[in-house]
Amino acid sequence: MKVNLAEIWDFNLEFMDWKTTSLANEDNPDATINSYIVITMDTKKNIGSTIQSEVIKNSLLPYWAKLTNGRILFRGTYHELKQQ
Image (cartoon, rainbow, N blue to C red; front, side, top):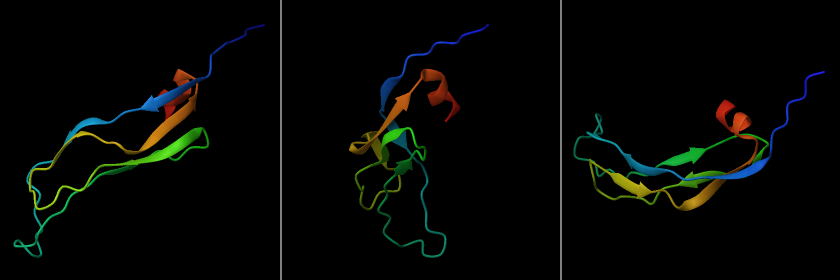
């Protein structure tokens, strides 16, 4: 008989150092670009499932040091988290 034991943990996922380069609106090159990022982890093992960055207004090279609006908290084993 083979038994695998794994501890269940709460993993608070943090997202840091996100950026993009060369943003452009091809249909309207003079348009103002207000950028933000939304990350969602869709699984039943989440306690919090969505995190969003702040809006960076009028920037073609936005950078977010850390996403802080909301949180993604995963409850499960490390192996289950890696499978997501």
